[in-house]
Length: 235
Image 1 (cartoon, rainbow, N blue to C red):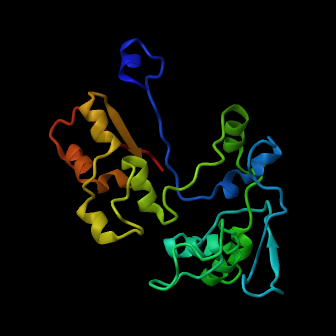
Image 2 (image 1 turned 120 degrees about the vertical axis):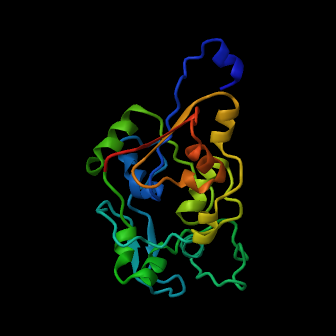
């Protein structure tokens, strides 16, 4: 919101951003299409082969029997490359975009899942029906759904969380522990809020990724951080 709008008594006083763990849109909200056909979700006709190179491969259709997923499906940049393009990633050999493709075929999810653990392909090829996630169902019924909102980077957790707070991962494509512990140097939304004289709070259940920034770590260690509130949520 422009500063002048705030000066003139703008109605938006507080913005809340809830950041959760990596999940695909189809996994959590794909079946919400049954509530609103305008949502770009799933129909059950979607499928993936167990092998993208075998023309006689078994095919798994997307279902609505999602449950708690453990262990995690692959979500490294290498795993996601295979999920999106159907080709295993090989550093130094695999092209960024395979030749001859005008758009990703999105056909490697089942294949890559089986590489992670036998039988996992059935797990990843399922989403939650609305009744199984009633809070999300209520939100979908009452509010807008962004169904073309993609990950900032097709990679693991921390690079994408870095984008949330600072619009860049500073070159990270994985959860590089050494670099994360050293702290990231880029400017964050919290710096901008501080400079503009606005307050902000960071509420968390586990140690927040915002502490991976040198600037936010400095705020939290300051004797009297006038613009920072760090609060832990009960599990």
